[in-house]
Structures are given as structure tokens and as C-alpha cells.
Image (tube, rainbow, N blue to C red; front, side, top):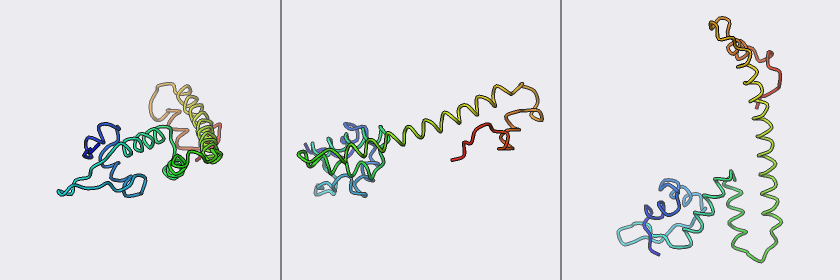
Length: 140
């Protein structure tokens, strides 16, 4: 393959500025360039960008993706560290879900208590103005 950056973007679903950013931070190697100084990419970059895109879609942070990419280059090594990264990420997702559940409950209560009158009597405005009226602690 000898793909220009636009074609790589189309094949992987990763935007051109994002591809350049990934090059800057070392997630993908700087590609060879043509005599006209245009980047050219191959099959390895397509696979690597697909891996990165999928990991980002699953919410993995860049540092974790970097580690996972390094591990993928050592197929005979133990997957203990990859498992650890995934478990930590799962725990963070569970924490965020719990936090969002509390936020949802608080907002739902505020909306349910609103009687659709005037702003001066609006329960939503009252609660937003005074955190002590909240039932749950939802500060991040």
C-alpha cells in the first residue's frame, strides 16, 4: 500500500488532524514521504489506526492505548498487563455509571417537583441555586 493521508483517513474513519496528532505523540510512526513531501501509509498503519480508533471508541485513554499497542507487538508475552488495564478501565466506567445514576436521580427529582409555573416559583431554579436542597452528593 502507498496511501496518502486522506485515503488512510477514509479507510480507518480517523480524521486527518487526528492522524497527524497521533504521529506527533508517537502512537503511530512518522510515515515515509514522497519527493513532494506527502505522507504515505501502508497496511501496518491501517491496522494500527483501526486498533487505536476502536480503543478510543471503548473509552481507553491514550497512555493505556500506547501500552496496549506495545503489548500487541509482543504476542508471546503474558496478557496480565492488558487484563489489568482493561479491568481498571472497567472499574472507572462503573464509577462513572454510578455517578451518572446519582445525577440522573437528582435531575429527575428536580423535574418531577417542577409545577410548570413561573420562574420565581421554579423548583429547578431553586435547587440549582442551593446545593443543600439536593438529596444526593453529586459533586465531582
